[in-house]
Amino acid sequence: MRPMPVWYHETYTEGIDRSARFPRDRYRLLRKRLNHLEGTGLIQILNSEPIDKATLLVAHDRDYVERFLSGSLESGEIRRIGLEPWTDAFVPRTMRIVGGAVEALTHVTRYGGIAGNMAGGTHHSHRSFGSGYCVFNDLAICALLARDKHGYERIAVLDLDVHQGDGTATILRDEKSIITISVHGEKNFPFKKAVSDYDFPLPNGTGDEGYLGAVKESLAIVEAFSPDILLFQAGVDALEFDALGNLEVSKNGMKIRNDLVFSFLDRRTPCIFFMGGGYSDPIKHTIDAFNDLFEAAAESNASYCNS
Image (tube, rainbow, N blue to C red; front, side, top):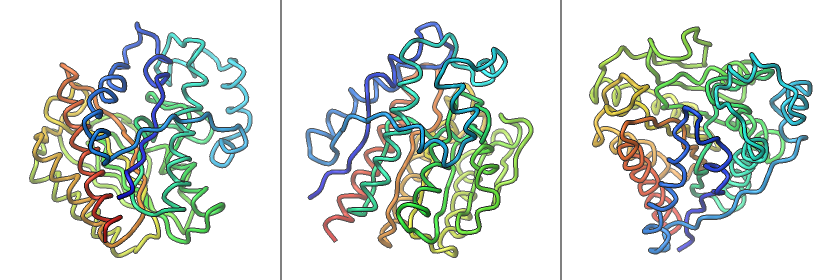
C-alpha cells in the first residue's frame, strides 16, 4: 500500500504572528492529531518546499508577485489580505504553502490517487491582489499547471468551503478546459460575489439536508464533465460550530460530504485536496472535522491503490 502524501511545514503556523486574528494553531494541532494516521501507514507527511516566482506567474500578475516578495505592498493591500502583522517568515510561509500544493499535483500526476496539503485552498486571491487570508491562489495555479505542464485536458475545481471561491472563479473564468464549482453561503464573505461556472449559494441555517443536496448536485456536474483530475477545496467552515460559517452543518454532515466526494473518486480520478477554512471556537471542533477529512481521504486513497 502506498501511503497518501500530505505536505506540511512548521512555518504554516509559525509564519503567522501570534497576535493575528487568524487561528494559526490549527495547523500545528492538526499535524499532531494526524500522528495516528501516519503511524498506521495510511499517510506520509512530507516537508513542503518553497515555490519559485515563475510558477506564481502562471496565475498572477508580475507586478503583484514582485511587490509581495519584496515587501512593498501598500497598507491597504495588506489589510485586505488580513493576516497582519506580518512576520519575517510570512513570505516563505506563503511560498511553502503554494509549494506543497504543486508537489501534491506532481505526485498524483505520477502515481494517481489522492494527495493533500495541510494548508491552502486560498481561493480569495485574485490575479492582481490578495484577499480574505489568501495571498496567491493555489487552486488556480494548480489548475493551470495541470493543463499546461502536465497535459490534463479537463480539470474540475470543486469548492465546498462556506465562502465562495471568488478569486478562483475570476482567474479561471475564460479557461474552457477548466470548470469551477462553488457551494457557499449566499450572505457570507465575499459580499460581492464573482461568477463561477456553477454556483450554489445557500441561505444561513441551511443545515445538513440542504448542504448535502447541493454537494450532490455539484458532484453530478463533475461527473457529467468527466474531468481528468479533481481539485477539491475542502474547507470545514460550514460546520455548525464555526465562527464564520452560518450554514449549521453537523459534524456527521461534514463526514458525509467527505464520503460523497471521495466515493466519486472510486472512478480512478486523481485528486488534490486543499484544507480551506475552519474557524470554530473552540478550535477543537475544526481540528476534529479536519481529522475526519484527512482520514476519509487516506482511506479512499488506500482503496484506490489496492484496486
